[in-house]
Image 1: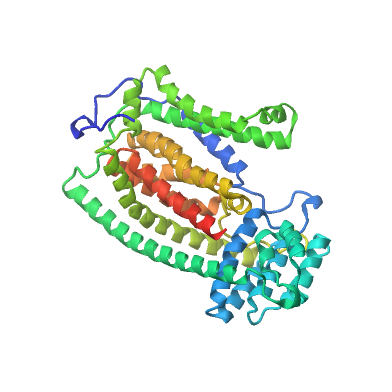
Image 2: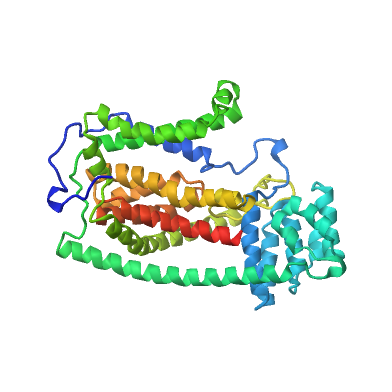
Length: 483
């Protein structure tokens, strides 16, 4: 990272090689399609064959989300049992396969809220489920299980086995600890929600004031759209996405076709090699384009701005603005989810379209964004895995995503377009590469626009990197606490 750049030097004379190669945008578009496809951005709604028509079973990610919801139910049951009972009924109606039903049966037995019947829920577990799990769950809700049986049940249901009642339908040994932790989590979520509301209000006000002052006085934003080089920025971004897309395609092709693709994917540390190449090659590319490395870093935003500590502080304060943008995107995503759900239930239900159910005897999951796989990794992992997830989400992802999205792509687009168009296009590409599905694109795009705003304000990438790290760190930290 180079030293700070005085405002008088922020827009240097044009450098050579301003135009991007003709191949850059085709590579970007194809890469977005392949990466988006490989992470199920356009996942099929219907099974391709009769063999795929099996009861939908919960994944580790589904169980993780069910655990979070269960802790909220446990905390709410001490205050409002009736509300907790309604929530449990909704969870049961959502389906989730046999493991989901077994988990809910144990939750019902543990909370003992009105209008729920854990015995009936356990009886609804199909014969296709593990016989051992089915028998243990039924015994847990009818008479209770001992500690050896609890350990066996953990192999099937993980944390939910802790909810199983002891012999004689006595509370489980760590009942008090479970309730206390659920209440602590509920309180923390409540205060985080309040903090988010304050941040959104403060951020919205700060954005309005900054925009007004910048139009009236100028000089608020340090980003200079005319800085060069620009063309090489798009090329670097295209190379970054292209190498990543090649790795994704190789992994999917290995599963689908085998052969040479299988051998390629079996190379030791293949994912690490792809990641290293996707970062190193774009940083070496400017030398082949006749660009000085220091000029490349300056335009990329890899400089100290007004000082590292000031830029870090700007990122921390600026995250409130990101939260304000995120709120708008979340509202759009919720509206989109409502519309899609209404269309599904009104025009695309099993009653109107025969064969609509994707699994015999299973219900369609509710419409909405998909859950990020990291939730399942945290749920199944131990302390080391959780620390790695936290490092990945709040360290590597902010660093490298900001380098290439807000650093390279935003720089190139701003040389040709206004801020809003550049920020939205960068955000859409950024959002489409995430595994939460197409309905999450408005929310993720809005977050990306917030990061672009920080890039415009500070020019240095330190502020958007810090804001990105805060965003991911808070979310993953909450998950680690809940799971």
